[in-house]
Length: 234
Image (tube, rainbow, N blue to C red; front, top):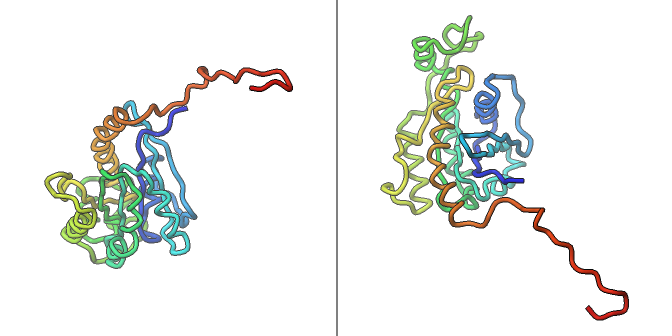
């Protein structure tokens, strides 16, 4: 049995929309969800690679599990709500330290969710024809709210992460490539987010394959030990 070739982990405060992003991408739907307990994962076949996608709980009582889920991760999606500035602050204050167990060349994406709830996001969705039939403005009667977090705020966090990890900006993807604004409800930028990460992970996966031991166990090569007679010295 083959292990997944790479692991992607979503981190972020409770109710920022991590589960909805994953379900929009994997199941192509926007369901009513409840808060994740502990963690959950999907397997995604991407080209010839298998990627595991891990959803983590944002609640304080499950916080300690985050570093376990991040262990060996090739990419981490740090998720915030564009209408809740505290959710962005929490990423740097409470969640960044959990990534210490990730791969040394781990990729980081800063992802703003729920952009459809903002006034400008609703206008952009209408222009692109996103959201499906019957959607008007915020859709489903959702009141539109002012944006509270701006793209430059996400860029600043990305640079903070590079400083925390002691990484040179010249050696990693540019902030503009790794900061996204998404809507799980309309699907805006959801595919772009995951598939950008998958593309960037491919060289890492190939390098790990070349450097590391085989990732499969060959049970056909197993030979049982020879049996000795009772009372004889082996």
